Length: 441
Image (cartoon, rainbow, N blue to C red; front, side, top):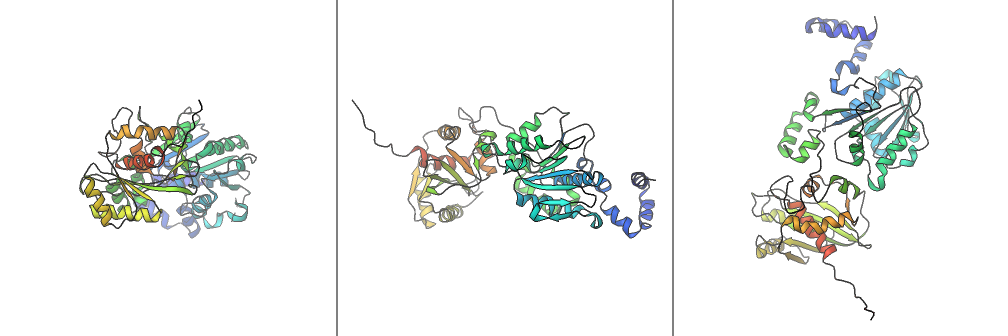
């Protein structure tokens, strides 16, 4: 009787008979049982049937994506001594920390007697039967240009660096080298984000890409109940919650001033040295109302704007949000605070002064709606003149909800974070004095 037949027979037994059968297993058999993925996995964590080339696992945080990817690699390596597997993450550090040495990584999920040997200096894992896996960084697409592989596991592809098309270049180079063996295959595990690579995969024919979707709650048996409860209380059905917990890909709204693709194209790993730093503030009408938008932005010597931080606070008293502004100003060495004063200019200035902000405070009065004020700033993004030094999910959700023509269709009642960004970038880039011009008659 094969191991598969024995497993099927075991699963067919009533619970009491199954427990008695398990008690008769030897120590080695019980060890094997504990790491038998087919027995413990949820159906969604197992590779789907069919002649697919790419299996895309796009699900919420804690769904078990990493475990699914690691177990798929382990099964490939065990079955094929000739397997040459690429392990690709956003960086080499993440490939090692998550895919190899993490709690759900390849070393942790492998039985002790069949654990691969990891050689960090060579970025290589080797199984006893001769199968091998190599680590790569998606941030270095050229490293994937030459090597050939039979299989690949790509982790968190939505996090891969999109600047200058690096994510797509890494993916394409990997595909071009995926030509060993009879049926080269690739697994991509990720939390959804509307980046170009994810959108491209979702547009592929079903026979080419098999997609698995899932929510965080589906793995509730292996997650702390407090985690799920707290995350749902914090994020609920917000856009961020739908993306990070429900595994939903948030699509662009027709007519929005910002799109996800535009923001991804604007993203950089870090900002250069700043020539000037400004804090934009959109104060709330009351402590029980909306968030206080606090956004840090800078401009470099070349005139390119950079969003450095979203320091916004929710349901804060005047003292608390003013202290948050003061903290952000000190942390980023800002030289000015620009605050909307429509809710009472004297109050806003006095609150900021009470927080011991020693910077110039410029109060601005909104004569147009939020979306109308945002249009010139959106044009700066379209021209490639603004970059995001990092990922700011709540702020970016609001930007993608600002519509041409004046409506707001994003999360919450008001785009407070987006408005703070608009004030900061307007101060840095649109209120600059014109350079002297010489007229030639």
